[in-house]
Length: 198
Image (tube, rainbow, N blue to C red; front, side, top):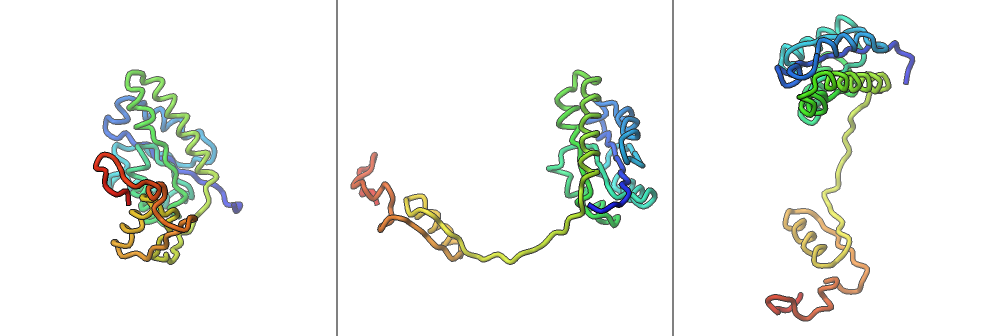
């Protein structure tokens, strides 16, 4: 990691009432201001919407942010959204971290606002600490051989090899025994039809 000055921006999302209905997001935002290397904190209603993303881009430019923490919902849904957002602002998309306070706090602690808010602060503190250690990454592409190796010539291996071959792939089937068929080759009939096993 180089010796650049860390400048972290924290973006706290209310997610309408999904998050703010349980978590005191204003308190979480105020807490975030005191975390190491945090130079900007922005709270808005829907961070994933265009106005929220524009706030992120604006803060990156105004505060020369080189790390971004989004305090919102699951990365499973919105991590690509926020990675694209920071990339459009000129920041490496891998210098963005998310704290999932919707699923991990507000939805599971909806009857205890104080506990949900305290847990959200812990998640934000952890996310900021992770963000401080992030390094820019570069995506690379590599050529892929359109072939498959199937290990084991039992019934499952044979079927897998046939399906792959039917899909247009070159298939290499490897079996340690001199014949294929696996355990089924040792049987002459199978229940319930009593047909030939192979």
